[in-house]
Length: 234
Figure 1 (spheres, rainbow, N blue to C red):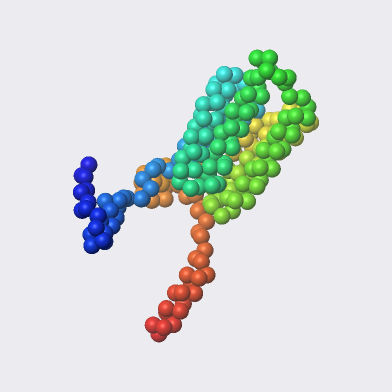
Figure 2: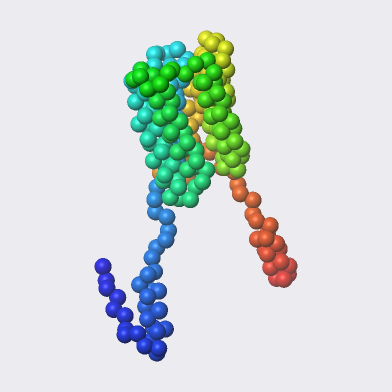
């Protein structure tokens, strides 16, 4: 590291000192950190697919799903959300941290009663739990209307999944439970697609898998400035 030696402070030398300080403090403020969204989407997607394979009746609920819920669906999403916070992405922070703790809370609901830490939820508690998450997800879905078609699919399917889970628990219907499982598999697969698409598109430097990014409209003030400049040039 080079040490910048400043001249002794005098009224005459002050402008020189300030210029040297500015030069010494000149840093590259460009964001060189990686895109955390694929990590969060893949953590959510893979865990969702596996849980809903259970809901569809493919296998029983065991340590594999609980482990995924804690470590990949839970902790990995929280890490992705913190990274999104560092990038100033409010939507990404809110979504990944919230769903990361959703997976941790769901795992706790399943495990705590077996450890004597509270009673198992009854016929009303779990539907209320899923309805609240469904409403939250529906609100985030509105935000995706300004982001991309891929995220619209993820959040739209996820909102439907939460409401189907609530309906399954309210009715106790095995048929609704199976339908819910397959809908959840599609939901998780859509998140996996959205995550992998971002990875592959970045690696290849072109669109390998389209995401349907919503184009941001040009600000009216900018458009007006351009029109004015064009008129003057004419």
